[in-house]
Image (tube, rainbow, N blue to C red; front, side):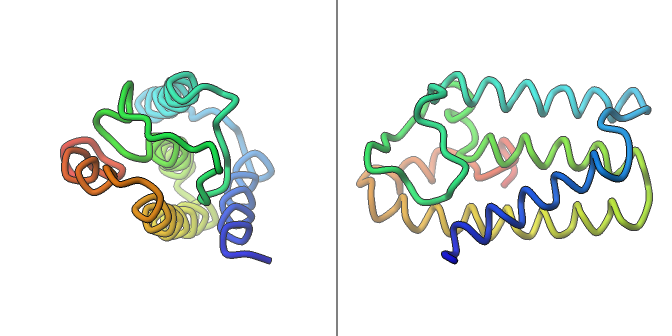
Length: 143
């Protein structure tokens, strides 16, 4: 099993932990809004990248092109941000230990996954260093 496959398996195992252990929509209005914004961000990122080019794996496809428009103009990994927004909303809405562990494991996994992906993108795209200087990894204007 490759590093890429392992990271995706961990990600999806964590994500599947939510619907199998509780509601898929937050009860709290604030957390529900964060969850909906996360889904909207994911859809915007997919639309911007074009669904045909989206991959769940961190290894860039052979036809990979840098996308610097839409949400990618501000953050380099909007799909990772979207996933974490949904997980954050559900975990804080539930406030139980299992959801907290899911969020922690998922967050660590996503950070490892984005760093691995960025290593590969740096090797593939000459302009990626400049793109990294102009954008943040996950949180606009912060990190």
